[in-house]
Image (cartoon, rainbow, N blue to C red):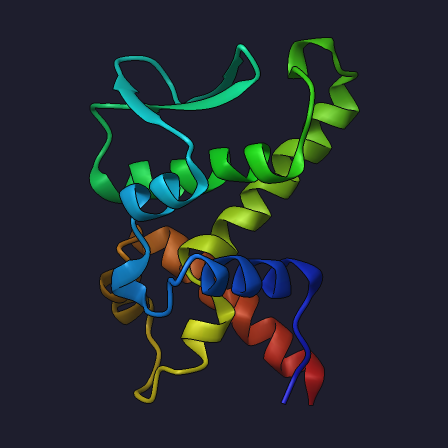
Length: 153
């Protein structure tokens, strides 16, 4: 047994509160609707924008579904955890926010509490298919999961 990090616990509590209990529930539509954050698709890179005090997420329309899901989870981290506009922040603070959003993304796309329920041998390909993420993303998330498990024994 190992303990959840703050991020793992936050993601678990958030998803359970939104009635998201299994990998098939992890969708852009379900999460954005539950959080009342509109998502728009456009030709530019993905970003989070605030307009009239309301958060809007823009995703690049030409990206594959898996990439859109991964980028959405990154952008939703900014919505949930960060305030202000990055163009007014010092570069090191922007770097910190981006690191936090990337880390959050791995845990929202592939939540620890859902990984723990997988009863078969967990492989990157299995994670990729089950959680609708890219292969490299699945590899990195499994590495994070296994390193944490190894550190706990």
